[in-house]
Amino acid sequence: MGNYQKLHVWLLAKELAVKIYKLTGKQPFTKDFGLKDQIQRSAVSIPGNIAEGDESGTNKISVRYFYIAKGSVAELQTQLIIACEIGYVENSVMESLADKCDRISIMLNKLIKTRSENF
Image (tube, rainbow, N blue to C red):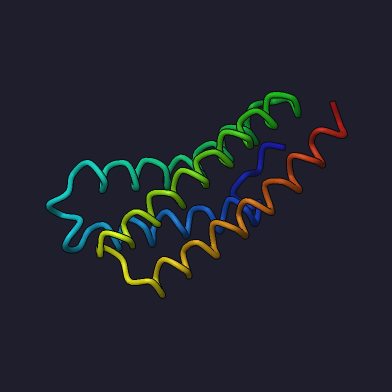
């Protein structure tokens, strides 16, 4: 614990958040403040909660934050699906981002399992 910047899942989540910010910094997101804000918040919540969990000091508290990060992954995926269906995001872009979300979620599951074994 305590070295979150070396966690592969944190690195992927941070990269995803950067991609989301770049995507939502363009039209048509610039005029849709509500969806833009929600997508950005859920995206930064993922690496933020991974970092906070890893720095929390106990495995039990870490797992709680990792579950919150997983929830943010699902929230982001939902928002991306909606953005795609209303024409804000191309299908290929959404599929690529959804794939990254899936990878992060799988990695979080493994991290949760490992940390849960050490309560």
